[in-house]
Image (cartoon, rainbow, N blue to C red; front, side, top):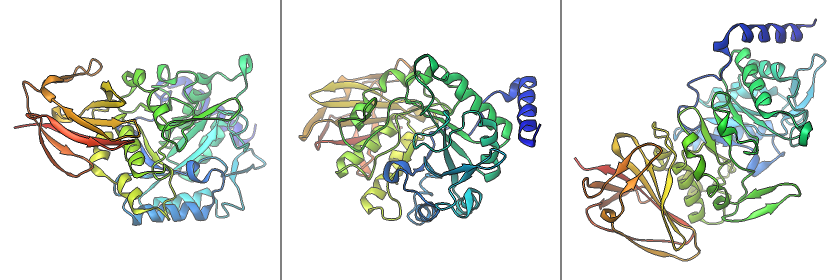
Amino acid sequence: MNKYHRFVATAALTLALSPAWAQKFPGLADTPPMGWNSWNKFGCDISEKLIRETADAMVKNGLRDAGYVYVNLDDCWHGERDANGFIQADPVRFPSGIKALADYIHARGLKVGIYSDAGALTCGKRPGSQGHEYQDAQQYARWGIDYVKYDWCHTGEGKAQRNPVEAYTTMRDAIRAAGRPMILSICEWGDNKPWEWAADVGHLWRTTGDITHCWECEEGHGSWSSLGVLNILDKQSALRKYAKPGQWNDPDMLEVGLLPTAGENRAHFSMWAMLAAPLIFGADVPSMRQDTRDILANRDVIAVDQDRLGIQGFAFIRERGVEYWAKPLVNGEWAVAILNRTDEPKKIAHDWRKHAIGDDVSGRNADFNKTDYDIRDLWGGKAAGTTATPLNVTVAGRDIVMLRLSPRK
């Protein structure tokens, strides 16, 4: 029995004898994780140089201080496994290795994420973790990894497909046995309803297929499709009861900076905040435009996403292509977003006192005939009156108005 197999046997025995170990690491995602991921912009075209430059830019432009602390390598960082079966980084793209890269990122006050797959191969046909879960988790711990995104490609089809609960639980237990706290991001695209079984397995789970950088579209890729922002948004409402601190619905990564207009980027970011979604963006950070940076760094909107109640928002009015969303916040406050899904501007005249807000999931409600609220415009960055008088505002096409309501003292 070699060193690795002794490790696996010892870890398995420890887990069997210690039920308290058979759980994810607690306290790692009490609010939705925030950070950057390489895939949406760069795909497989990643390198040590790009990741280092991205980490430096996140510090320089203030995104780290705004809360974006994870720098996550997605697919295609992999090289081959060594003679003992331990995964190595691509020696051309990552000549210094992942440990040195993680040290570089940690030295800048950031954390490091990495990608693998529950199949024998990743989606990019690099080595997956199936059959090597404990070995890979041990390697990640040695490297200083803080976050693992675990995908679902090459896991078989039909009756031959791997059981997802087994697959993700095995990686959870492997991470726990490795001894280093790491977030586990479950990325099986919602195919097996992870919200029903993954609360004790991972810290977040994908609810849909991949997002793409369009407002409303579906792009076919043979046996699967990628979806636009609104397409993904429309799939979230029935899942809100499953979201809470430490377990988040993940509608996929942010396309902020990759959508064509400022309004679309702003609305996309706002709605992911209303969903209490992980805020993992994928834009090119070293060459980021100021308007993209300003959207991502809006601390008022971030605060809605990061609210410690962890309640996912919901639509309470839908009319003429306009949706009114509400999200309960701490201290009796509320976030309200008015989303214009259409291409044309919409004039809004909203009488608060005619539209109480009630949430049957959280048991919270706002009766504007009994309590007046001060209003803050989160994109305007200013006070916007109170709920004692109707709200009159124009919402541009494919854009949003986002407000925070605070009970008047």
